[in-house]
Image 1 (cartoon, rainbow, N blue to C red):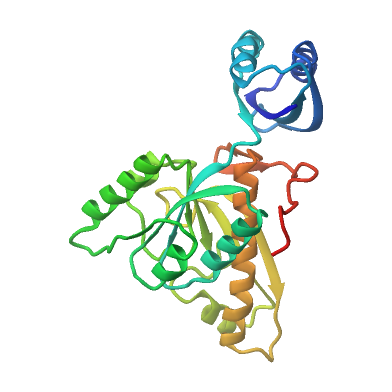
Image 2: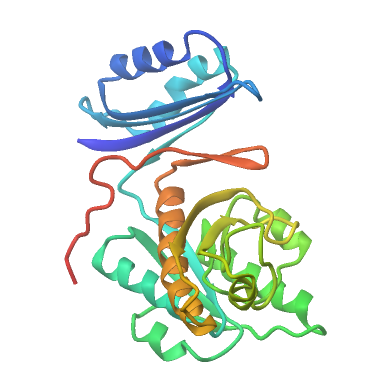
Length: 294
């Protein structure tokens, strides 16, 4: 039996859930997991439903047949085949902890994605990437060649059919044009707990302020630097006895975990943009399971 996910966004009104459930039942689909949210401030409704097709309805058939129901409620909707892995490009500079964490999760099946390329502005991780049989592209970026470098990045995106770009501590600011073209398809990890301690050395700033919690934020990239809709955050407790170097080490662990969780949510279609915010539904049962342990 095929497994599909239905995602819906529309104006909030009475009867949406009943209409969706009735349609799926008519198509021989059994609902295995469902999440919904009414935003009373914006008047928007969000829903994600996992189903098993017990009468062999195809993705195309479900999309076509659902159009009438969607029209009645002014829905933006999509059916997704849960067996299909999203094509992802990872971008990295010289901090490799997030890249290595993602490669491990990908290798054991804990992060079911298809890594179609790794792009870097340095050569540090070429051997690591190539040893995983993943194409590696070194695209150096300077003030003089930035437009050409970004054009090459977009060529890689288009050539590979990538649906998501992950900035795994990629230390170059993307242009406004690239952010607009890839809106909702670039995820970044910010090495501090937004909005405090921005800049090149947030852990030193946190140390100097004597903070008791440090953390990381993963968000969608927009033209407003580090201000995109937040997907995932976490913190770790520190004390007065720890050094700035301790902060960096602890922070790296949090960064890797937060970024992986944000990617997991996105690839399973659990994240919905809601203005400057996001709606992030809980993971479906079994979606964290790994294909193998190591």
